[in-house]
Amino acid sequence: MTTETTPGTVVDHAQLRIGEKTFDLPLVRGSEGEVAIDIRNLRRDTGLITLDPGYANTGSCRSAITFIDGERGILRYRGYPIEELAKTSSFLEVAWLLINGEQPSQAERESFAEGVAHHTMIHEDFNRFFSALPRDAHPMPALAAAVGALATFYRAPESDEDVDAAVTRLIAKMPTLAAYSYKRSLGQPFMAPRNDLNYSENFLHMMYATPCEEYHVDPVVARVLDLLLILHADHEQNCSTSAVRLVGSSRAHLFASISAGISALWGQLHGGANQKVIEMLEQIASTEGSADLFLERAKDRDDTKRLMGFGHRVYKSYDPRASILKDACVEVIAKRGGSSRLLEIAMRLEEITLSDDYFVSRKLYPNVDFYSGIIYEAIGIPVNMFTVMFALGRLPGWIAQWTEMRRDPDFRIGRPRQIYVGPTERRLADSTG
Ligand code: SDX
Image (cartoon, rainbow, N blue to C red; front, top):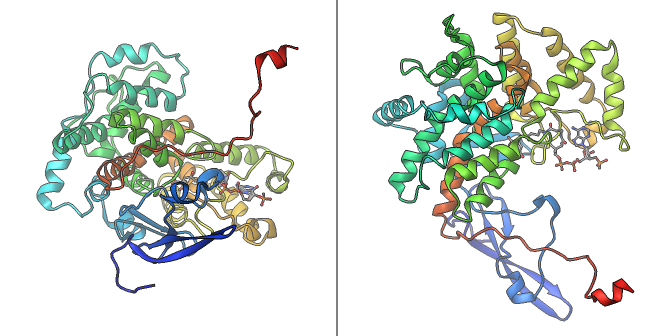
């Protein structure tokens, strides 16, 4: 392999022997040295396809947005370690970095924040939209539907300027839609956004203020919320991001693509896990000594129970986000109170697994969802809004991946193949007898 090459270009070839024939397949190497076999011409040259359930061994694209090293527990957004961004940046600065590739200048920072602050309102007709939903509607399908419905108010962005405007609108309006879906579930009136509050403060205001009482934002809560949003902002080609890319690859509306991502994120194996973690911890808290029983069930292959918040397709060591969240849990509960009981149970579960061969041999460690719910609860976010918080955080990542996909010189509509295992040709006459 040659040493100095442009990341993602061909550095060597692999040989594939099928029967008497040998085929050369290009090898491409990324900035961090990971190598892939480029099989884009495999079917044309060999007549064969690959089979990879869950795409565990398949790269869908070249991307310059997020780098994860699952063995070493590394996560970087545009090259910056998550630990540094978590300490020093605001969520809107991280959103700008993910979408534009570089840290914002002072002027860009101010104009972006200004643009977002002045697009937080949603059309009055949306009030009728929410009133059509059942009172107890889960806020995730409500949010997915509302973001999809935004596409009925704004035409699909094509030019770069249109995309920039649509991006600002979506980043501005999604917290408003999220807060409205929560207020709807309470039967409380919607609270209009305020232009004098920053991103996280404004969301907390729309969630908790009422016409009868103003909500005074605790700076600790606002900062922790910004941290949570930053930690969830992107994670390369995860399930929901791949959904956004696949829908966007048909040239669908940005808002329709993001709506698909919200729906994929809701699944309990993905973003829905944070709600399941709290339910699991509360179940263990309510039945003394059930932690060991729960772990036994999680290890039993015949039992569908899993230790929610544990395990990861990529991280085979500690998820760096879980480390940051664990420390933040301790700090927030010390400052704000909250359920230290749930934190104690979570830390006890983690301690047991670190010396349990079932988890150690499978490299199962806490992931981002294991501690996030405890913080959400400590800052007053209701359990059914936990995955909505994940979606608010992931929004700039989805947008960055969608725009990168649309500008990719390799751009093609996503259309995987299959190995057919159904009935071979047969006649109706044969089967009617
Ligand atoms: C997120 O991809 C991303 O980047 C996602 C995410 C992001 O930021 O976008 O990081 C966010 O989705 C985090 C994951 C949240 N989900 C959960 O916490 C749900 C619980 N975890 C799992 O269901 C599971 O670990 C997954 C879904 C996260 C990963 O599944 P994989 O990679 O398909 O792994 P697998 O199911 O093949 O498991 C391998 C083995 C199996 O046992 P054996 O067949 O070898 O006997 O590990 C076992 C699994 O049974 N296993 C677990 C387990 N997770 C895996 N056993 C008990 N408890 C668990 N949590």
